Image (cartoon, rainbow, N blue to C red; front, side):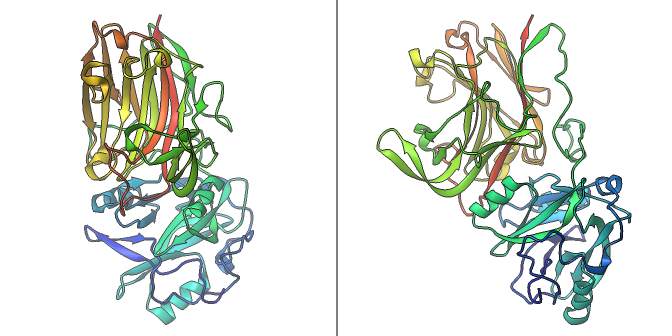
Length: 478
């Protein structure tokens, strides 16, 4: 590939005296490389070359350790690292969006695996990862780079336990994608595919501990969804749950809205396309995209929207009067983002809003410190209903709700509603005599973009944005 390499120069962020590689394409000259063009869909990455070990990849080794990806929403810089400590420390310098673990790797050499080297140039403070011996030699000889050694081991070929890791570039930024959905979203957002870098391990099923909201140090990265069965709660019956473990959204549970949203001066168009709502790795993903889209509009037939997203509800399918209403989710972030988990009265078509009542179990208004704050509210006709009658907030600063999965819940009975995050009750509202909140309610999940409350996206907002919902459960008293 001559002047087109699988690994270009990277910038380095210095945090507490340590060097952290940011996957940034720079305008300076890249190390000379050899092999075929990285932009082609090749079966094996051309950068593997002679550094690959022989034999079938050792799967138990390849899926032994997570590789983390975090993003700085202000600069759109990307950090790929095998060190959770490194990823966590980077959050203090603006890398607040945790993209999870796109792939796994081995921390030790094993059959069929190849070492990924971190290259560093002290003069330019550039660094990059490569599995190419030719690229290492060229970077050291011609460009003043130092080989800092192997950071982790991956596969140079596909296998049952391995998945291709693709790299995308937009301007000076890079992203890494594994799923076809993520690749399609990046392409739709104007990112250019550079092909397969190597093959990373497919994340194993994991059930890590819940986030401890009382500590400043996050627990081990949640590598996936909670695949455990819904627990039994004494005195309660599980009356509804969707674990999102299938291959498509269960339309017996959810209606997917389609068309322009007239409320709150929001900018998004809700669609029922797979690009905006889909199942991936045991989670429902609601994806916000920045794109030009002709949106259905009941007033004039269509609307030229600049953003698309999704809104799902159980209206006409499932409704509930009282109960423990719970969701486990990882939230989007950034200016203009407005994810929500809420309920509306099933009688809304008869009495309209706000007489139907509304319970906002979770709302987050993205951007800066707000990415750490969950808000809960209730609405009914007092004050016209446009403003919440009662509400409160819960913060997990310095962490953000984009860093990991959390459980958001409302415990609703005839006397009160208690709102909690990860079991920590932070607000209780008395609803005795509030007739509007004593009728069956249906569930809603949506990601709004822009509007009077969050404000509109700005230059710091990163797209695509994803709202991951691991499960939704409702328990009612026996």
